[in-house]
Length: 52
Image (cartoon, helix red, strand yellow):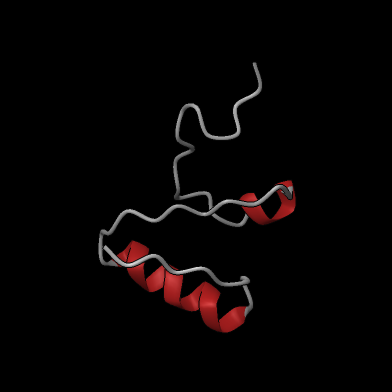
């Protein structure tokens, strides 16, 4: 399992989209709602960032 940490510039954004298109599980974490909203095809995981 490879861990990749990158700022979501256009290059890395495209690379992550390629992983999603290949059917791999990708975790995108960001405190910013505008960045999270760019990834509508990703489902939020329960327990990650959920408010109690």
